Image (tube, rainbow, N blue to C red; front, side):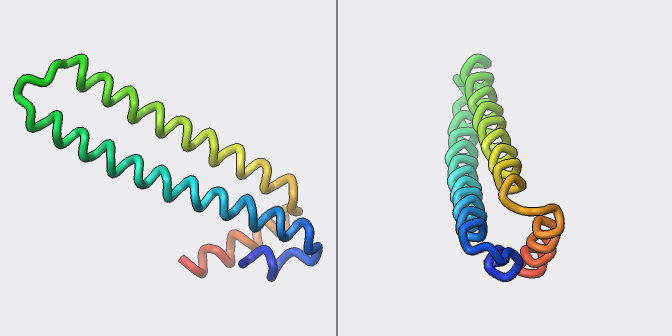
Length: 100
């Protein structure tokens, strides 16, 4: 973990690792949600009797899930920044980019 390499305080590093893990899990869950929504769009698109309201409802659900995910991630980022210095945050970001 980047936090172990950058943060000397073990307790803060553990907190940062937990937040990072939570963010990764949220991303995985959101990705799965998008797959389900994509399948629902395919089903609706194949149905010539689909109503405009059904399409709007699916679109609204998609927008809601996106907003909820981004709100969650933004909250985690602020929480993460509360546990690290600016320098630590930047160094961890660099290390994470190298891994990607």
